[in-house]
Length: 486
Image (cartoon, one colour):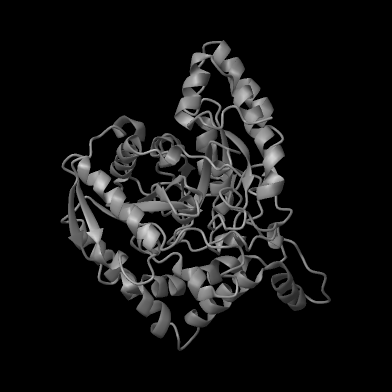
């Protein structure tokens, strides 16, 4: 049976539930039905919550008694399986955590539940969020709902495919170098990486702690604003959480674009950019100009060094963070004759190839005699990248450009070519290195019918500006209203 709520945005579903024209149980049941009928083909979900229907009934009972049901109104939400959920298996897409059931929720999960959201289940990802295609999951690859011969992007590819495949109206992902925005672009949805520190990382299984950030994924910027309002805010349990006032991001969603200064980065248009992507981005910039934005050229001169910098900083931090997975406490454990053998066999057998590669790369770069040549130098270039953004934002409010250099690539095409895989993040990693917010919104389709994403980057804690600009663009276009036919 088709999902009768597939064409609705999350905001529209909230209105239906609040008005009594639909129940949370109706909505959750429909999306569960879509998972049951579609997930075997797409493999977007690793686990489904056994309690979501009971939670929906409880929310409906509260509404019938006239009690507040929260701003998320009993909407089902897919949560990336690298984010801890109490009593619900959390694997990080790895054999290492194949049977791990956390005794606590991540702060973001606590907050979405407090706001009336319902955890529908856990979405697939590249192992430990290390990848750009969701092909490197222990639980097999996720496919792109627009074309099952293509990747959905990564590492939050399961979250993106859940939304694009109408298996969830909202999803939570994490973004270390583009892992929300790149799959949002490949799957034709909207995805926001907030400012570093805006959303608590407590309960997020760490990849690279100075880069990781949790954020919303949905069809529209308005839906992302709804979900971000629920999960954002200071958390004393996260030492990197920013003690900066948050807001209801829906309050400013209708802010006009007129007078907004929009910067087009010269370094984002050149060799390697697919011609169809460039055409869609240029046409999207024209839409912003027609809405009254003041478009001008800016430069980010160190952006060419961003990928190289990222692939030193991130593996170094991964090397440290993943040292805890040794088979002693909560992980899968290899059978061995000695403690040392147990450590080595567990890590060799339970980490996939890409994770092992990044651990070894990071360990090498941090080792005696190489730290200054690699990690220290990368940290200095990271500062220069941040300085470039600071200078650009003295002239403009937002920077606009492509999210990815190409539409989604074919399954398997980059697995043996790590350079091509890493270059899919060429336009996204800079925002993580600089700690700034960025959003990807759908802006077109290739001739073969694959989605194309536009990226907007903003000043620290300027999520409202990103969301309102995305919303105004989406009021003039219908790319976010398209649904896969397959």
